[in-house]
Image (cartoon, rainbow, N blue to C red; front, top):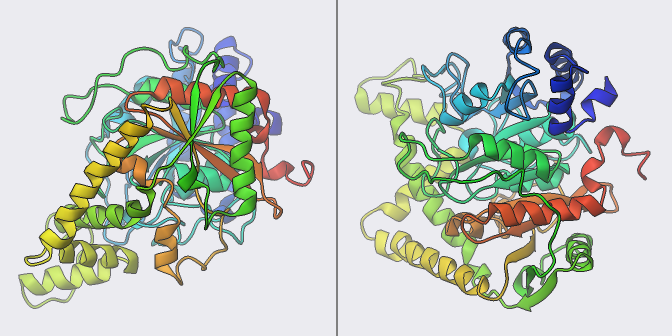
Length: 488
C-alpha cells in the first residue's frame, strides 16, 4: 500500500488508465491512510462509502477517460459547497448545513472523474493561519504533531503530506493555500484572481478569495488547475483560461529573469528559511535563469492593508449568518434583535467575532475614510509596485512565511504575531496575482521550508514551469513524514 500512496496523482492516474491499479484499490488505500492518520484531524466529514461507490462506477470508463487524474482520490476544503454533503466552514453556526448544490469546482472535478474522500478541516470561515480556530479542533502537522499545519487550508495540506489523499482543493484569501503547503512540505498554488470560479465557495473576502490545489508537486497542481480553471457564467469575475498548463511544463528556464526582492529577505526572516529559499535561486540560475535583485518597499504596508480590507468584506459577507434562513440558531431569545445577537455570539468563534468587529469598525461612519478608503488606495499602490517589479523580472522569489511551523497554541496566544506571519503572502492576493509554494528544504528541527514564486496576472504557465524545473533537480517534494528519519 505504501508504494501506491507514494505515487503522485499523475502517476496514479496513469496506472489506473493502464489497468495496473483499480480505482477501488486506490480509494481503499486512501481510506485506510485516512483512518491511520486520524490523530491529525485533517477531515471534518468523511465520505468513505460514497467514495467506494464512485470508484466502482468510474472503473467502467477508466481506460478511455480523457482526464489524466481520472479515478484519483482527493478531498475538498470544508468551505467549498458539495451537494448533500455537509459544508460547515469548520464552524458551529454551519454545523449541519448540507448545500443543495455543488460549487463549480466540485462539478468540474466530478466530470473529470475525481473520487472525493470528504471535507477537510480548516480555520473557522478561513479566518486563521494555523487551523486552530476550527470548531472541530485543531489539525496537527504530520511532520511533528505538536506543531500546526498552517492555515486556513491546514487540513488539506496535512492530508496531502500524510498521504491520505493524492491532492486536495483549498482556498486562499491571504496565503491560506501557500502557507500550509510550506509548513507541511507540499506544493500549493493560488491562481490569478478569476482563473478559478468562486461559485460555491463560502465567501470570506470576495475580492481576495481564490480556489486552488495542494498536491505533491507542480505537475500534479498543473493537472488539477487544467481541470478547474476557466470561465463560469455563474461567476462574473471568472476569466477565460486557454491552453494546457500540464503540457507547458518543459523545465526550460533559460533566459528567465528571477527577481529577488531585498525587502523580503531582511529582518524577521529566520536564517534557515532564508538559506533554503535562496537555494531555489541558485538551482534555477544553474538551469539558465538570470537573477535580478531590487527593492520592494511596499511590503511594509501589506499586512495592515490586507487585514483592514479582508475584515471589512468579512463583516459584510458573514452578516447572512443570523439564525433566520439557515444554519444554527440560538434557542432562547426574546425578539428578532436578541435572536441575531445570541446566534452570532454563540455560533461564531473568537477569531471570527474579532474580525467581524474589526471590519464593522473600519466601515463605520467616521472611520471609513481613515481606514477602509485608505486601505483601498494602498491596495492600488501594491498593484502598481508589482507592475513595476515585473518590468524588471519575469517571476519573483520570496519566502512563504518568516519561520517554519510554530507549536500548537503559540499563535492563538498572540493573534498579532499570527497576522504578521502572512507578510509574504497577502500582497499576492491584494494584487490578484498567481503564487506558488513549493518545498525547498528543512530546518534543524526537521520541519519543511517553502519557497514562493509569484508571477504577473495569468502567468500560471511560467510560475508552474519554474517550480517544475526546480523539482526536476531536487527531491524535497518527494519526502514524506513517514520517511523523515530515513532522510535524516
